[in-house]
Length: 215
Image (cartoon, rainbow, N blue to C red; front, side, top):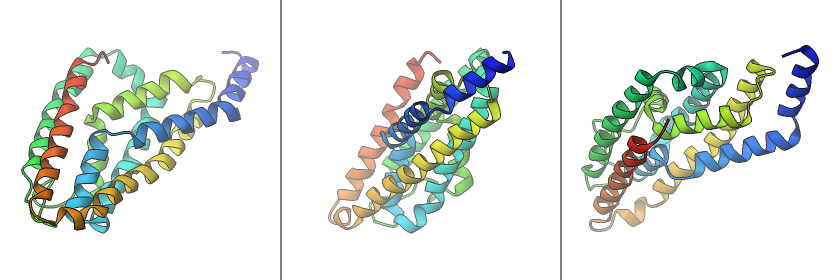
């Protein structure tokens, strides 16, 4: 790309219209239901909002870091490696089914429910989960193929990460807060038990589109 063409492309990417579209995509993608949000809601209901904050921050900052790497070229390597795609597909499916089972079989007593060994996710566990989360990969590759122009790779990748940090901080804490807000209601009878089962089933259902997806 010649220097004048690169300048035009960069100006196109950093136009207000494209940045608004990118930010809107980020908020829509992070707020809609997915494995992260199902687990955050379950964590908020089981452990409360404060104990779920590291989990929420791991999601909110872990995915933008992944999106940054994908925008810099990892996404292209992913699309050209059948082994990497199939490893993600089946490894991610196995992990999601395991997490779905842990959520569905969590204790029925508020505060005793569990996602991982009787405790909420840590920051680093939640951040690492993004790399096997099928929705995260589809979002990262989708934004890279739709919005990036390649004129200023580092700046464009940073802009993508910034958009998802803003969206992720709101959505991750919002979903954890949603679950935490239901703790009083869920503490009565067997409601938490049924809630955990519903969250586990919802999480397991994300395996089907991942297995069928054409990455």
